Image (cartoon, rainbow, N blue to C red; front, side, top):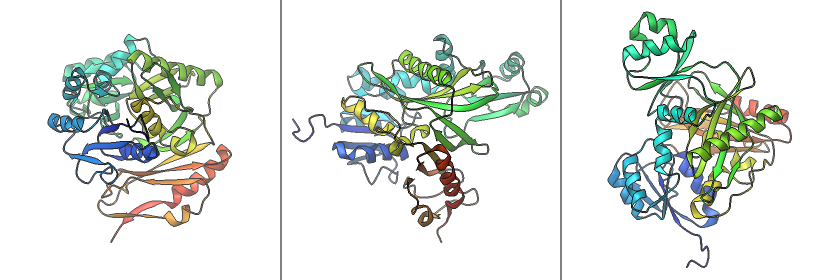
Length: 388
């Protein structure tokens, strides 16, 4: 037995991007080892003790990672699920279960799960052929509709809002030529997210709810505000729906449940993410236990930690500039580094690309109003420029 930490395990992460990097950074003090599977120059490469170089869709590479890990988790949904299902049958501990990932990875199955379990969500239709697109558009009605690819959407890709009449009049304007779903467009007051943690023993806990502003071009979060400004009844309902969703999934791990708050004050579940999520990055500084530490606690069998908010927070995504790709530097870093309660996180990516997530900034303050003033200055000051 390890006398320093009897719960020490080697945690294997499928995916070595920024989520894995922050998980490692947040749990170094617990003295766990990490193994990652990803490309040679991934953000986790400099932090993990073991690095399996390979593709996330390569079953042999996943098995190689499993051999050097006590427990497996993942930071992205686009991987070889069949190999994970085989490993789980063979007795490998995988959190969350690949059975949960099977449902969530396919947005069509995810929506069917929500409706089967009577979890409120927007009306939808599954489509593949041209005839199915036209029939679904007519059935759902409305001038605007939302189209999503069933798989492989990530960071704003694989989702679009389209004009129904334009597609009905010209099928060349069908947004995707792959199995997809069409949803009713929901006018809403706010888009919110509830982060949920559930351990192996059935204990669940939520973090304070956040509300999000999106970049319309990239369909990525620009500003995230915590706590969300919600009526107490709505807040209670959102947390109950989020916990019900994860309990019905039999989900062990950390999950994001993204929601719409409609103009009629109704909560509708938009999507579920089976991993730490962009809407929980602020928890590193803003809460007693971050989403990343919480997942590590679940992986090694520690009790769930407190998710209480320490101070009001705003998170800003740092996205790659739209006018270049390649080597970069962050302009304005010295300026914002003088500000109290401002925490800059850079993900260690080798090159910048337009709208690529390159980092984030968390701003803490005594009041939401003070946090907004600081966040405005940070947003206007920081930008990625070419490193020449």
